[in-house]
Amino acid sequence: MAKRIEAVGVTAYYGTFKAIEDITMTIEPRSVTALIGPSGCGKSTFLRSINRMHEVLPGARVEGRLTLDGNDIYERNVDVTAVRRNIGMVFQRPNPFPTMSIFDNVVAGLKLNGVRKKSLLDDAAEKALKSANLWDEVKNRLGKPGAGLSGGQQQRLCIARTIAVQPAVVLMDEPCSALDPISTGAIEDLIFELKNEYTIIIVTHNMQQAARVSDRTAFFSISQTGDPGRLIEHDVTSKIFTNPREKRTEDYITGRFG
Amino acid sequence: MNPPSLPGSTQSAEPPEREQSPWGPERRLPESTPAADAATTRAQEARVPVDLGRRKSLNGEKLFRWLTTGSGAAVLVIIVAIAVFLIAKAIPAIQGDKVNFLTEKTWQVPDRVFGVAALAFGTVYTAVIALIIAVPVALGIALCLSHYAHRTVATTLGFVIDLLAAVPSIVFGLWGREYLIDPVRDLSAWLHKYFGWIPIFGSDGPYGKSILLGSLVLAIMILPIITALSREVFQQTPKMNEEAALALGATKWEMIRTAVLPYGRPGLIAATILGLGRALGETIALAMTLGGTFVISWDVVEVGGNTIAANIANHFGEADDFGRGALIASGLVLFAITLVVNVTARVIIYRRREFRSAL
Image (cartoon, rainbow over all chains, first blue to last red; front, side, top):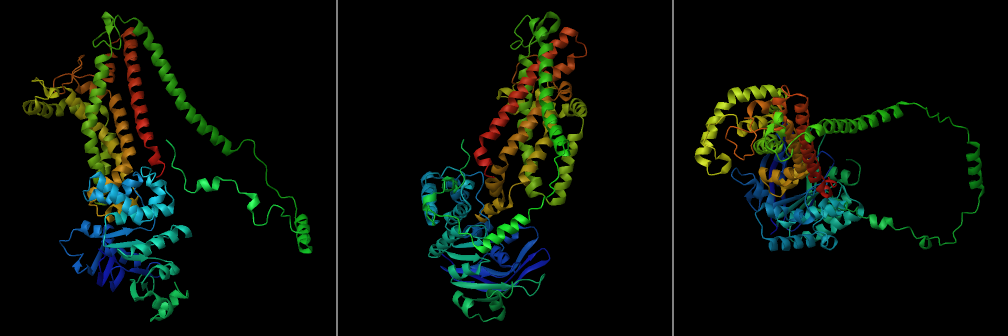
């Protein structure tokens, strides 16, 4: 299930503005990789390049090579929707579909894939909600609107919706930044469980979070405003946080900058 | 329907249990200390009178409040005044009618035989046909403007469509009866030839001023309002919901079906009903493009068709006092139809409230 992602010389633009430059890194399957760095350093842009959500914005484009288990996801005849089905994404703010019930939210991706059989949808919804540690809280109100849940529950609902289509990779763009510490803890526990099945890449501003949940950490930074973001250092999390190779990484994680 | 319960509200609703406070029930205020005494004294010394100003008896706040309340009340007064006027003028005419006003189809006021049955049917039927033509087109234009067209194209096209709303209805009527009538004749013949087995295209001619012509003109007239409103609601779809759909592997059309259309549905219904309201009340364009008959027929291509408003426009000039009363009575029926349509729209929109409130 889980797959390896390789980025070679990835550069992303918004129109003429170069947001990230020459990112090269390998992300191993069944691991959690945290992307950290100051605001505007391009970690979210890099994340959105991985499932081709970057190009949704007008004028945005990506150069370089990004592969999923060796398959170039930017090749010309690749189906974008297939890429996104294989590489799911959880967003910064919980975004369940407001007009849909909890159940319909979870199975939205399956329905897009043409799954119509009620029994299949029921099983998939239960499995996804259980994996997202949400089943016990919502099993008696699956028909109620997803937007009626608390922020933390909504985010777990979004995670359930993402993993219901059984992607190989799950991208998370600051998934806890809109949540309280208890909900954050629940999501972090969940990430720890999910890495047994998925490759997880998480963008976070919270360095304790990166240290808690990730196996490897990538530090992004910019030299000054207007410059493209670059990958400064990518290593095992414990090494990044105790004995970083780069001075800039050390400055950032010790709070001297950023 | 219950509003969605706020998470966590059940816990916070319980009164805090005093007995379990960490200090126990016998907790007292801290013993007075020199430091605490000094603080109290300072607080007393500091109690200098503060000028908090006085409430003015007549201020802008109050004035504005009365203005807005007055405006709101004026709407009610106007509606009631119109209803009273219609009823007062209509009663003598209905009493003078030899037949049942609601079930009679013909309009022979000098013989005291008249009724709204055919007119009311024609009003609703013409409007519904116009909606069936206009709504899909308006939806397509609105989606094109909000999600497909390049921004400059969308702005220009949106402007042109708004311009359509500025054309006076008499101009539409003239255009319909002088120009559009010929293509509609051909279209009617074509529809009859290939779809004549469907009763609504059953007539074998002659073709001309028909429900089809009237509805087409009407459809063009209500297109701008439906388009403008639907585009507005489509544009308001939260970006994060669109991205959620795309990230699940939706194509653009699937994204629109998953995120945009469900979000815009209540607005779409409201836009349709507004268009229907305009279609029901449209007068002069229909007076000029419908045949003006007094029969109930589902056939859209035959010469014929009539509506309450068109009939009023056609007959008001020549009517005597009693005849005007009769026309006003038909106006009362139109008023009632419009009311029912609007209430239905409200019910449809509010039924989805459980999901709306979560937005």
